[in-house]
Length: 139
Ligand SMILES: O=C(O)[C@]1(O)C=C(c2cccc(Sc3ccccc3)c2)[C@@H](O)[C@H](O)C1
Image (cartoon, rainbow, N blue to C red; front, top):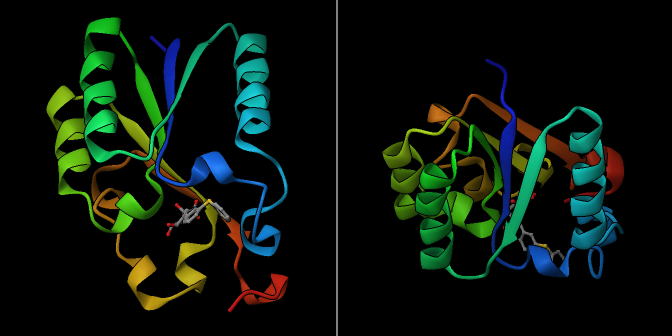
């Protein structure tokens, strides 16, 4: 049975998306990203819930709640928690919901420390944008 009930989670500072560093994170705001995702999901008869928090524990709580909601899959941009949060990793593995790790920027074309993720090894897929790549004037 294909996924029909998705949850899109965005981590810390992504509520400011589109307001600064457009050369890395683009100029589209998070509400616009979420609206476009919901529209696309609806066109595929998929239910998409969205959640953004700057707080690690709130993200853990949201992931845990997803299991009781019958969420089939999670798309998560952990933001800076990508590189630090065993707690969010454990929550994802604990609920047993498959997830896709998503990044706006090309984390592999940026600082060395951004290349480590606590999520990629257990993700169904990992998707990166090209923000921050040299081709886009990144550092
Ligand atoms: O590229 C991403 O999506 C990423 O997950 C997002 C991140 C991130 C970090 C800080 C702010 C923002 S969003 C933003 C950008 C510019 C101004 C304000 C907020 C995203 C990074 O911490 C991660 O290393 C990479």
